[in-house]
Length: 133
Image (cartoon, rainbow, N blue to C red; front, side):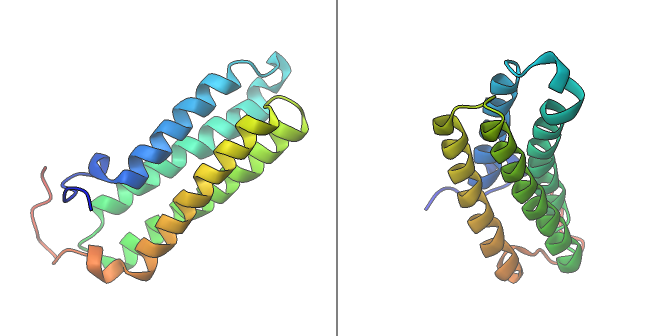
């Protein structure tokens, strides 16, 4: 087991999603120009939204319902990202290998997020706890 997370950046799931989003950014740079405001934007936006929602959830730990709601947002964005990955593969903008690797990475992220949601009580903080890292 790793070290205790003090800030959202310490979470393995956050680091994994951040790395995936950066990989997707690099891969989408090769997408056709006519996809700039369509598929390229969707892939980048949804992948970044997963990390943002995890960061927001982390700060909402004193409020269990809000914490779970933000994790649900992260879960939904991760599933959306998988959909855009499928489109990118089908359109042949991503190789099957890149697409499969990213899809699997998001499957792991989804499993982790579901586990965090199911066991939210173990992540929650008492109201008023100082969260400064």
